[in-house]
Length: 373
Image (cartoon, rainbow, N blue to C red):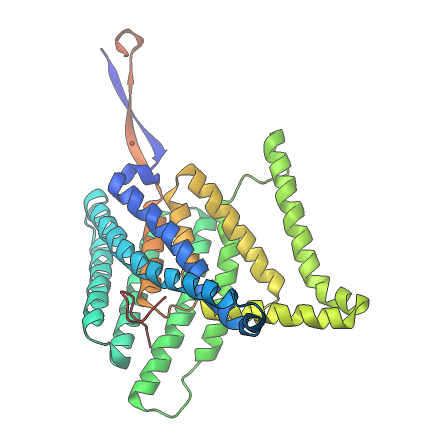
């Protein structure tokens, strides 16, 4: 029997490659995060917005109250699952990918962030604690991004991660610097905090579009595969129609009926208000841009999840955390998401070929999530 070793490449980013406990923990984190986002961060704001309707419809108040309570309960479940997922991810990172200096720093930063989260559940963090917590989060995120850039060489994927990092850093800079000025009692306006907040939001929306460029391939009109071509035509036609409709809706409605146009604008402002409190977006950009980013992100995540790629779970958590990381569980969500995205990579392996003769794997601040100042 003659064996010849040859070096090849296989995808090392399947969620099933890291054990059943890790697989189901990550899947539960993603599922409960989605439910918490819908039931708590969004539905509860809708309930506040339709308070006038509650007077005419008595069923509205108890229904939204029940959904909000379920969402607050889910917030604690998400926090527990995040701790489990991050712990298992740390074990996989430490055991499966060597102990380089950068890996050790990532492990240390993430562990410190988990310890601070537990400590601040016992002792209220205050302004100084919030500064330390957000500083450690920014440092850990920076290390994770550096590791991603070292281990991944696809240009579009690098651009996605860098854009997302700069976007979320705009929020963290806004929080850290504003809190430092408030803690020190300085009356002067913090430098560039509002500019960084605005630029960060725009970069987050851009990153959601870049997710499609980096991972959402398969909707090209140039393919010879009829099924893929039909899918591409449906996707681009839907996206283009929605984008064009939203861009020109305000103008066309004013031409058709000014009163109807005014009502639609008020409704869109209400939607923006809900998402502002739920995910931190201020909607100062055209609404069509946000919707375009949502379509690109959702298509990419669904495609990657069907493939079993860790990148799908990572990108899903990164953007479901939103832009305003007001609670500790949202910060941990971002860290876990980027860590999962880093684990999704191609690594060289040795394959063996055998001769033919021998040929025969937010919540409530009183819960497990702490509110950041």
